[in-house]
Length: 193
Image 1: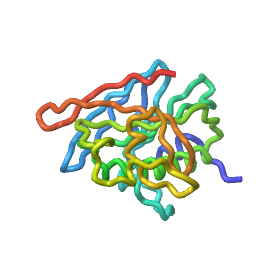
Image 2: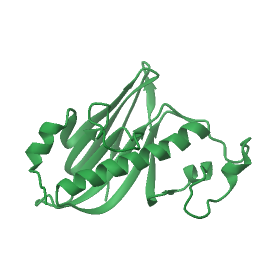
Image 3: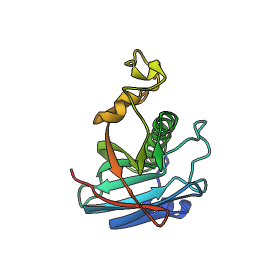
Image 4: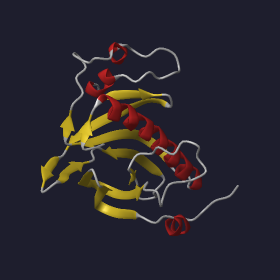
């Protein structure tokens, strides 16, 4: 079995941050954002920008950041946090976000395979400024239907729930509302167990 030491993997990554407080960002021209995450546990945040993306995956849509929260001093038990930052949530951007979560999960599981971590919990987060997702008056009636089987029909109804289903499973989903300040969306969030 091939194994890597933590510092060897860090050398492969172009953008990461660690500490009890990490500032993650989105530098897209259509929506710059900064989100400060904090925890009493050590955090290790990995950007999934084009430079850090694992190119062997066929699925190249990925979330913006993976945050590993180390739950013990041996660094063997983790909570996994996958974060996508959007300026505005619409029907189409919410559908795309769920695909990006799937890509973020695949990247996370590959990193988990490089180390011998035990994932205790997986959380998905959407950080946003505006929501233009109206489940009751949508023009697309398919968005109001529950999903059946393994094929995931996009459903905006799950935006209002605390869990979302993508074809890799059902996961806890948390929304983080950001404030617009000088054309940069900003916010902070404390990760709680």
